[in-house]
Length: 373
Image (cartoon, rainbow, N blue to C red; front, side, top):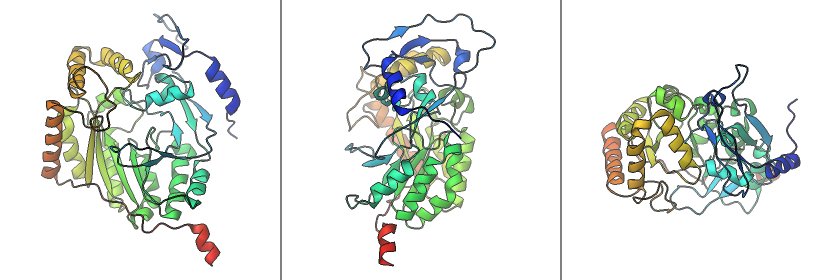
């Protein structure tokens, strides 16, 4: 039986231990997106270790540690007008996928962790998420609306294959017939075709496979623990065959590195069966900026200046991130306009339409139906 670390002790250990801002031998971070663990911006004290020039042959890659999350609620709410949803469910906090560019990395700092390797190797697990979700949907206070899975993590990261927390949440949503939108970079989503198909019968679901690049060599170092591009295309086909509305999110578009791939990605996804599409342009908030800059030093040093210059041009000219609601997703300026035009033209060319509107008219509370019987 799996023994989970005690929640109270976890918080004591995390809060009382300064985050290490460190650089280590690349072999220690095999299959990791980040190669450094920058200091937590909320901590006044941190320490730096000297880089290791050598590493023992017996060293092993950094292991992932899972902690039980003791949250007492599961539906998160936001008032951001640019994300397309007001509520979301995050079965996990942190993400094993290790996408170096992930905008959600700074959320780990609120837990006392680092946005670097901690984000992808110190994962909070909400084992009671399905139970919490059922309780909140059963409440008279709940107004039926689309729930996004997920906002700051990937619901189908590797540990989901074993724990099936996301599947448990989908089982609850299917019983209530509450609409749900899913976005993931993992083909594991096809495991839940039965539940997604059931929801689709009532116009209660749409799935987005997120694809950044079709080049597997780039994917391996950019988003190391995600499914390969071809596997995501296969997932699109399987979901479409199962009657599940499915699309692609070209995200994030990295100016100067992957922007030229957008037409090919959209064409490949349309051929696989994608019915709708969207995109976002890279933004690098807080600690994500130094993480990505370090990644460029390691993998694309000759292109680093060009890539960062393009990102800044799309973000007002002098920054790598922009928190403004009206520009943070699509950017601004001539490069952003070119990307938007190319996206629209390509979608028309390959036959990709708008995202379907999900329905709340079939929502029900099973407990109330049982009382009527």
